[in-house]
Length: 486
Image (cartoon, rainbow, N blue to C red; front, side, top):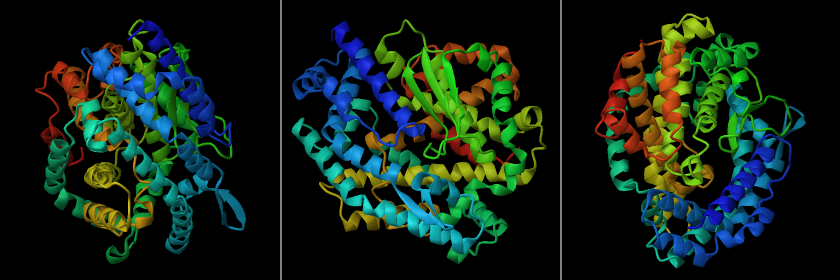
């Protein structure tokens, strides 16, 4: 493919990231993608995409073909995507006698201690979610039709061909993880529910959201130390924030700003935006450190690398760096040295409960999403399967209303699962080379910067081999989960 195509593709990528940043940061009430896609529609017309798919004889061409094919699909459904996103951005509900933005109400759910109020808030949120499910069903049906028009058997085969991940094999591996950690999950869930004074037989997903918010630990993570804790950590690695002008911090509070931190890589590596609406608390630290992992990866990527290796590729890699940093908030050494708190056993045990929850949830989602995408159009039977699969994995009641909203494009749940496997391998490597306090070692920072510089040229499997492993190994993750919290 010509250099001109890559230049235009990168410009498109940047404008798209800018638009998502403006909307997520609360600077725009609407997400306006149509003009951007119209400006660059020649990059993703069917003939161009089919040509790119036919010429995947090198890794950079494979990444470009993957990018173009997924953007082709996104372009086909952009009007529906905008309608759904804008409806959520602008939606509000009545709560405590005032109109509360939908996004803000989602964050309130994890902080509502009264079970009756929590359930009522959740009911109102689900009602808004369900309103948009017909649009989501239309969107999935259109996507499925387009991949068949491109000559693929279905969405799963389309994704597997492009990302080169055997989703059936991964699902089988993760099913083994779920089975081997089932007893531990039941034990940790029972303990968390007991601590939260929630009757086991009455527990639902809203209760889990509250337990995961862990307000009992919020005092350990004060709002006023959020950014200084991040800067101290990065300084220990030889990468203080003030030495990285290409990472732009957005900390302003805005009514419609996303309550969760996020990273927008508008131009890699020169314009990387780390967005947070500081509230304090464990979850705030966790999400900020996660997104900081993305920001560091993109900010240290080799600027001379081609666009395909700077911005595209296997997103499991950047997610593994994000998980590596947010796992520090569970590290006894980091808690002592940076957070300046005693790593009490209840908090360390909560950390394992938290990770088990997400691994089990995403493992069940992978199985469910394979079934969702095998159907030509979502229907009531899929809602039932969602309730069954996630309910079995989480051992609580799951609402069917979220069976279409709780789905990311491109089987991104597989990226997260692979990233969790790679993260524990990378963390084990750092501990073996630099000790438990690797986060305070500039030489560990040098080691990480050497990896970050690679961008996303290498897949998660290839990176695991560069770390000295035979490949991605779920057994190390299982062993890490089963080990008693330090």
